Image 1 (cartoon, rainbow, N blue to C red):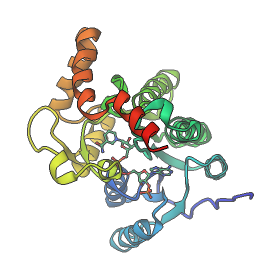
Image 2: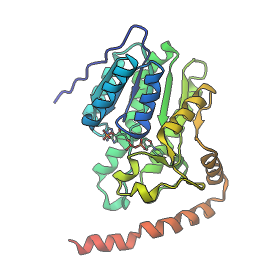
Image 3: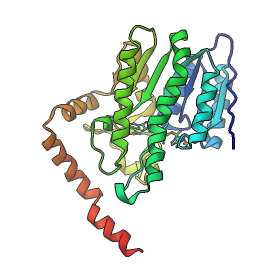
Length: 286
Ligand SMILES: NC(=O)c1ccc[n+]([C@@H]2O[C@H](COP(=O)([O-])OP(=O)(O)OC[C@H]3O[C@@H](n4cnc5c(N)ncnc54)[C@H](OP(=O)(O)O)[C@@H]3O)[C@@H](O)[C@H]2O)c1
């Protein structure tokens, strides 16, 4: 199959921003804020029955062009098709590489295809779309935001490629910001802590009990996180970790002795992921 994606419509003066994973959570929040600021939008997702009505509402409310595109970023062919379409938009103003998910499990019990897919969504998509967009972003003096996570500093044993791939996204963005420092492109890597989105319910956690509204690991609304991200972008902050809670936690994670960090993480992991127990369970079920 040779998938083709048609580049989006935009108004002559509508500065177009591409947001991946705009169906829900952080991506949908970026879309709402940028729509209210008058940007034209190019939104990708997979649940089109969720994305389309949101796009209709933004068109109606703000009089902007919104193009929606179904893309499975874990599929190489679909990613390459989106990348090719991005190259055909010489006046793209912004790119927000936001789509992402957590794949929980025990590394060797998961399939290589599962691992490959997560790496494609988090790393390949971020790199390939940035590569395709950068000439336009430079010409438009635009913006590039990549969504990583506070977990980009943590060995995430329960989701073995989540932390490592987000670590890649963070360092890649910081690297681009340095490499293009003499351009007028604004770069940011967003590294939030817990945010109330569909992310955790997708891995079977109950939002009612999982999200806390107090303490160092409290969860923030996606709209609040996005407002802070865009404020940090205006201030020229390359790494954005909204909320003093997560700034402090990030500082602790980066500076506490690694052995202490491993100990703390292991205590948490032992409760949730018992590797020996999981292997035995899988062997019994064969
Ligand atoms: N929520 C948090 O606590 C948190 C914290 C730190 C970082 N993050 C990061 O924030 C980003 C957005 O997540 P979220 O919290 O807003 O979760 P979310 O509500 O589940 O949104 C994830 C978005 O990514 C899309 N997506 C997921 N897998 C995809 C794939 N294989 N191909 C194409 N699109 C895909 C989803 O599309 P469909 O819905 O259409 O399937 C959805 O639009 C992710 O990169 C996540 O790692 C989240």
